[in-house]
Image (cartoon, rainbow, N blue to C red; front, side, top):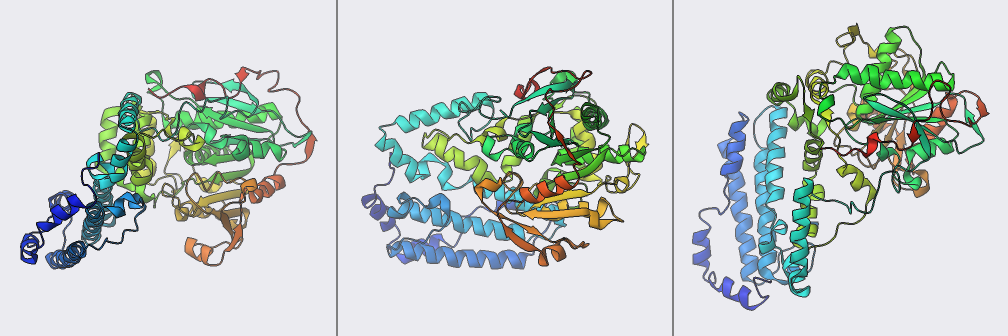
Length: 571
């Protein structure tokens, strides 16, 4: 129910402070507790200039006094934050003041975090910790301070509260906040439903071969290596936004790696296993089924890192397995890992190594929680507000359904990945890393490369994706094509041409610096997919009759796509 009637309650509450001396005396001690941020600053060995703190406090007090004065004059403070855009926040002076005071406190705490004196990494962690605290304390997140939720309880005669509690209990059982109506989708029915067949499987992956949609196809097939940290069907959500289907429609025979969702029995698998029994094996099978010495290969996110390591290994063996490679939002140089860096340091990696480095699983739900914390207002608190406080059913959204379909990783593989790539950044150094005892060197990969980054990517910053142009074909830079797309890590990649949305940047002049590249780049409307299609066509060979059967005499059809592996839920 509404705890504060619009007029009577507000007038009674404000009458306590009608005397300026009363509330000004109260303001001598700031109502904001700075102990949590002070503790956070000390925890990271950082300091903050007392003069700066005093200046921030003075500014805070002045702004708070001005806010109080507005309230005493019955003037509703201006609030532009979308969390408080509902009319209920503005029609009741108390809720308007509460929201405005929260935003003032948030600015003060954020300014303190920005003013600390610390290393860049420590400062980033302090900012992250403070932002988590600030976002969590929004009055929109609590029933007692959210007038929209209270109004809905009255309007629905308590039904919204009952439904909200039911949603919360269901999510507690699931182990995650529902961002989508998870009953609206089924893998193989209305997501991941492009027609195909599993033609190979081992303990690490199933290889799907898709049915051609054209009478003729290019002779060299296309192998897609998605991230093992997620389910593959982000590349095959719906027919209208499926990168898989788009490639097939362009005349390519498409193979795709569907990674296993490992359970405890596979908790011993290593990075070498993912390279040798994963990417390398998939390349070999695609070659053998197609009868082609060379294929085209694409790696997305972690899949791009795995593919690049596999190709470095094969080219080091003097093999020449690909006619081209495509990297989508993938890291090869881990110098700049964006906000994910807050989760990775020596202490945290050592802790993981001790717990699961010799066997065990990195739970998929931990990945989901970590990624959601990078955008908590959008991916956490928004759903607390709508699902729990207002009792609304989450909408049916294929991308968010996929986002919640978590994948585990074997502990030894995950710990090796963290230490050698994220922490030590060793992949970029020729010969520093080995696979199965063989040193690998990215510069030995001898194939044209299409490299894509997303401009607002918070997981793989586009400038980090650009650095791959320095590591692949370093002496033949004109063989690399870098494309920058609008939006983020997922939405930038999944941008089909038919939607006519967003834009992308091109610049075919090789440069050493990402910003210099962008300064000279041309912005183009729509999707970058046709640019990639043209690149593939140049490297796909001649056109031949589309295959009538899946696999071959050695690799026979096992089961229809999407196969079993992708349907396994993380425990």
